[in-house]
Image 1 (tube, rainbow, N blue to C red):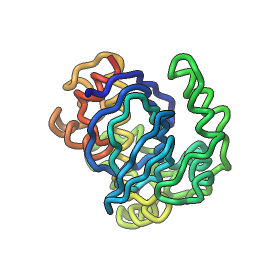
Image 2: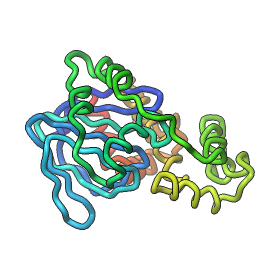
Image 3: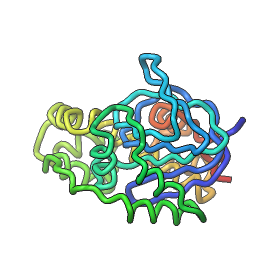
Length: 233
């Protein structure tokens, strides 16, 4: 069973709705929201199975989704207000049942892009309190083009790479490098979704080559670029 369905993007989120298939254990830098009316099973790195209609998965939590015929997934940047709402709703548990009101916001009929926009309107969380040095480093991600992005971002925030890594791990459960990879993978997914080739998507997102993009995408979201592109067809 292949991944097949709709893909939609917002500034801070990536969404998929459709038929899911096998994926590998992975840990997102993003906060993830999963919903399937017919039920979905998630396994964590310890082998625990979570069965239910929906789950909120915190950033940095290793997990694997079992195939489902109809599923909605959201991947949301952890520093956003939308992610903060999900963290509050899940009482900060690594994997928590999805609250009923959030599940309802995921079941809006129509195009996935409209459902994602509606979800953002309905699910409003507190403005997250984020260390200003992390904010400064994140603000630099879209304008830094050299290969050592994390080091350059740390310098722009006035701290060492090791300090930035520790701050991000304390705040989001992942090092800053994971946030960098999440941004790059999201950029590649956008490129694939508008019909660019794998080589073009890799270049657009700042990967050294197609193989580098493939390895990183599997690590970050559990899917290969080919699967992600096929799901969007």
